[in-house]
Image (cartoon, rainbow, N blue to C red; front, side, top):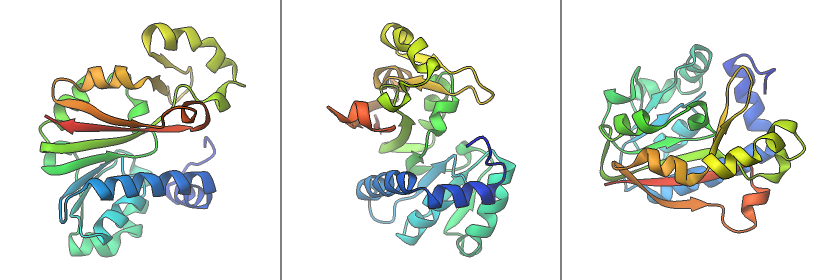
Length: 212
């Protein structure tokens, strides 16, 4: 997606990608099934507000945090009615709200080299018993095996459970146990998917962390 430069281009791209729609629908269903009725949620790295709009439509007061100016600009258009009604509220820091859940869809957390400080901050945002649900790039996905960077990092994955791809965006890949270690002691890893053969075939993995 290096050719996607504006919020509008990204919005169009991700809505017209069949694979991304399937992933988004699964992620949203999981989040909505976990959320108690009327519970507030923070969409962390909200992009253009696609998930946030659905959370709000399902009766969940939704805070959105998005550091990209281009994304924020399009989010303000796409979610203008919800923002006007205050069912969606933009925040300049995750610490500006207190919620039952934080969602981070489409590899937002893969932009962090270490999640320790992030989970410490989110522990001040999420109520006890609440959760963080993250969609992260699957480091075992065999569809990436055709790339030299994947093959070059197989041993790093086995030894350290983490590696970074040399690129402008500096995307990091993690095994679930590495992220779980960073989340402790504030959150425990309650569930992760896929299992079994899905580790080889699914581009994304979903990690559910429970606030303790």
